[in-house]
Length: 344
Image (cartoon, rainbow, N blue to C red):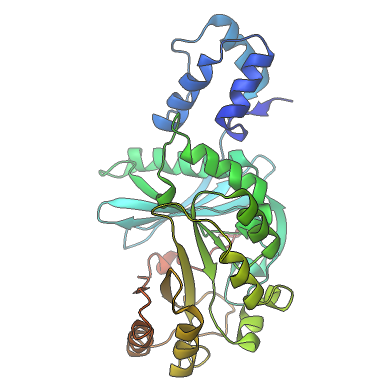
């Protein structure tokens, strides 16, 4: 069975070429072709016939297939991708100032069972492999080139789609290696963010191995009982332990930690919630993203009013913590934060 080219980072590819007596310079050519130029068709330029024959016999260049595209009135784009085994995942392109951020999935479904997230209603089906993660990026980029006048300008990558990225640590790390590679996509480490619900085994590995990208924690409440309801793994991995591991993660210049706070009407949106959050995070090199809840089918939670959201933000500013309210994008096609599900 052929290996997927897109499962290989640059070092992997060089090693395979070397082990088979081939010129390793082909690695640079291939990474430049597929990741820098974003060409889907196989590369045949400046590569020896012997190497081309080896590639054809041993490597697959197949990518996820677009099953459905939903285009929102605000120009957000949601893809339902069909994978080689028939599994499906969603990916979202979020527009800003003529450019895009891409929200990638890391698993089919999710094991975390967060009550505010539509993906959690699926349960975990399986992990994605590296080719299925980088494939989302490459196929979406080419879709933009063909369908939007601004072309393929994806400047930011966020692992905030379906799945818990740190539950699939090795694959997410390799995908980040490929995105960061100077030989290929060459995306700056400050432009990539990996989100977690607080999965301590993954955070422990991050502190030991370093992903060299930004980290976002789904905080959502500083109170144990409320966070237990929203994020059930808080019972196994309490917030205090999660924060202690995050404090051990080495950050390079321009890297940062973001704390995501989902605001739910009459649940975690009151002054006491804001002040407890401020006390918890004051003094840390932290950013807070406030996310007004995005309803999905079957959810009992509701979105708070704009006045409540603004008041929450003003209280946090008293604690000298930079705070932004994330603008809802794509909710008319269930593409907003927490609305992704493989059954679209």
